[in-house]
Length: 170
Image (cartoon, rainbow, N blue to C red; front, side, top):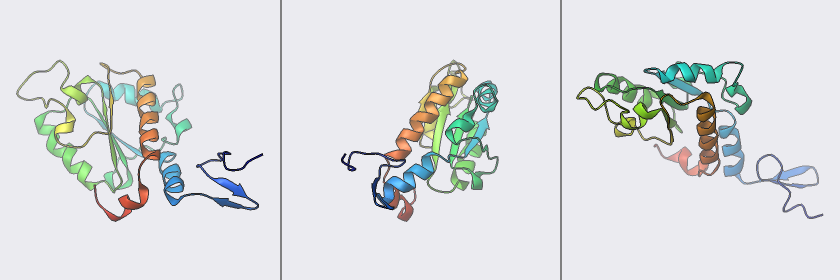
């Protein structure tokens, strides 16, 4: 049996008692399995975000159970709901206070595109102020959709170049 095609944990191979792998693969495996989200619950989508962390849907199965309400302790911002221009300044400031690497999830139609609100007070997508990694559609999206979006974020994290991110800011 060839050990080159055998994947264990984080894309490695076993040679005797030593596991050989790439540094990027190990760092990304740790990062994708320990995402600490910061909820930015701005409207009704925040209720679905709270339901995702509850026992029925259990985000902790994916290593995301530690909801952090301090930007210095979080690495993933989940923007859930309508972003008004008044709130946009706060969202941007919180994003800038997060440590790198950091990711953003736009949860719901309002966070992604402004939703049904075509008004002077509502921003037409949070991607105008912060870079968004994953968009989750729906009004409001079900907890299953948020879990799917978070798993897509994990896939994205596992494909990143980690060592180059350590030396440059996003």
